[in-house]
Length: 136
Image (cartoon, rainbow, N blue to C red):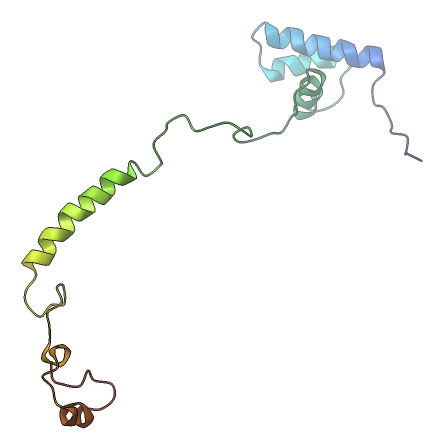
């Protein structure tokens, strides 16, 4: 069996409070001024409680923060900017770097004698298992 809830205000009093607060808000007054109008009508709570009471009476759910569900971003661009432009810039920068890198820096792979098959098996055994087999 559901528990009976205590009602703080009678229906007429609550309607008078909501009407007084809404009238104050419609004339451009602040919530603090609407609270004073509500208190004159019999409201005994806080400013936040009055806001919630008025918003619930109007059909809105109080306390919903953030972007409403289903809404879209205002701009179509991503937060970081246009990604395709960034990729183009990276390609423009990386190609000259590979062409101008000093030999032996590892930026461009060159064929080694080991890869070409010019190292002998004795050289690879002598240098150990962790090396590529020859001195290159």
